[in-house]
Image 1 (cartoon, rainbow, N blue to C red):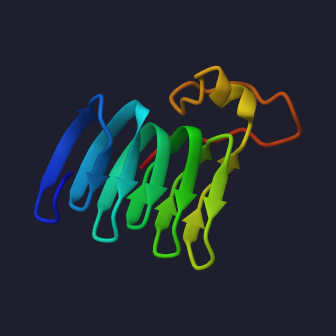
Image 2: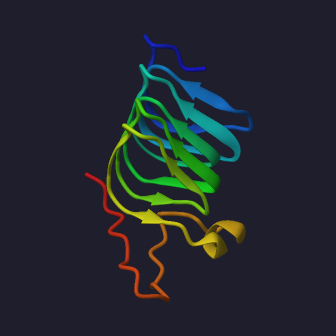
Length: 129
């Protein structure tokens, strides 16, 4: 857990679930784990994890290989790539959602690689900032 008074700038990686109640800037990569952003959490980072749950503020692109959940208290500005996405009533979201289960199932649900769209869906602009 990253507590409410903790601020981190840089790259966060690891092999265990993470709860963020503080501030994180940079990148968060926990590919086989769960990342939760608590109500007091403020994240300015790209997040790549198996499951991403957001109750706080996130600015950045989110890739979930299993699912992404934005709770009613969540505020997200960025693009989401995941086979399953839940936006609870009251959640704030600005960006695009790509729910192509083929990308996530093959482990290629990375927003760092710009892949051509195979359907009529528009391509994501993955530039942050």
